[in-house]
Image (tube, rainbow, N blue to C red):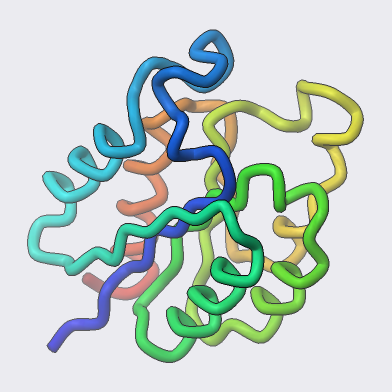
Length: 144
């Protein structure tokens, strides 16, 4: 069986579509997941979102062993979590970081990033389309 690409989301992504649509867009997380499923072309996906840091760390560890790649939007944990940084540094699979907005162009506190130094690549500022690019990149990196 082919290993899945894990698509992992952090806090408040469950509010997409209603939370600050002028920044994050009008698409819901379910919309994004549906677009990824359509683009997957037989590549299995594990689509998960949590508001809990420890759960996200556990999923990264699981994906390191069971996954082909990880697409990660750590959301606010990007700017606060050394635990995520450490889990990503230990990860055996390629990780692509995704952000709907461009954190570097926003508030100063969002310019601190504990995720980027521990991942293969970052896609930011392209809205939901960034997830599609990340899936295409993950498939290329893993030969799928």
